[in-house]
Amino acid sequence: MVSNLGKIPRLAAQLQNYDRHPPKPLKAEECDMLEGIIRDISSIEAMTPKIEKADNLRAHLEIMIGNYPRVKHEYQFPDPLPDKAAAVLEKYEAINWGATEEPDVEVIPTSPTRQTAPVGRPRPRTPSSPIRKRSKSPPRVPRIDHPIFGEEGIMRGIMINSGPMVSYLMNPRFPNQNCNVVGHNRLEVGDWWPLQICALRDGAHGARISGIAGSKANGAYSIVVSGKYENLDADRGDMLSYSGSQALENTDPEVPIISPYTEALRLSFQLRRPLRVLRCSRSNSPYSPSKGIRYDGLYTITGEETRFNTHGGAYIRFKLTRNANQREIDLTRPTAREKTLCDRVRLGY
Image (cartoon, rainbow, N blue to C red):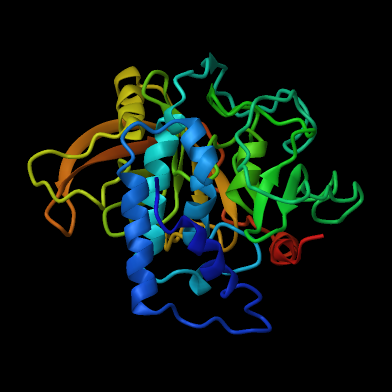
């Protein structure tokens, strides 16, 4: 159905172990082939979870984005391949790969007061969506006393799937917090994680890749300021201008792309319902953490406008205002120790 997918792991493998073997740049014909693969995946009209699983589509897209631990993003596939792969992944994750079941919504008080155990302690398990890979053996579970991946480590509840494609996985035996909750969800302003999958584990953001978490039926629960739309967005700390998904791709000056994620933000705007805002280190914003991803509190969407990208295509941009009576954005996180631990994550276990 989708041609040439089997060649992606081979191309990714030549870029691994960059510390010992500096990666070679991809040839022009290899880049062209990958662009064709991305187009082929994006053109699947009737996507289903069965199709995704059969061709391992999520895994192949994540390879091109650079979401596996032993390769730095700058050594991955050259621009604009990662952004194009991310747009396709975002497109299908927005519709849950064709699955029709919608998550229930739970509304809790938006007070920042912690109501239960601190973030990172075991909580009631909720469904998660770990990446599925074809592997000859199951992922190896880390030791419970491992300083990074153990029960008290910053990567607790996360496993590494080592194979032709190395990726992070949620440990199904580890209790995870439900992300589909309106409000702080027992988080504190300043909570920090080394990777977005850890924020998923602790109920901060319900997507491992996408910057918008929610659904068009229930609205958005959280967003990540990642720098992906740096030329389109604006970050002034207490005020945000945040673009809807696929804002970069559109070339139609009349009709913006209204994805399910953009519809989720629109519903939150209509309901005046706050959402969690996280910032990650990929952004050039002065409010972004130097490493990892940080929770910066609740914001409410206060406006919507249509703007135009560099192709002249229309896109939707939202204005968000930080809610009052919260702790200030904690620019001290990550701490020096957290940065050191973050650097050790890619060493694995």
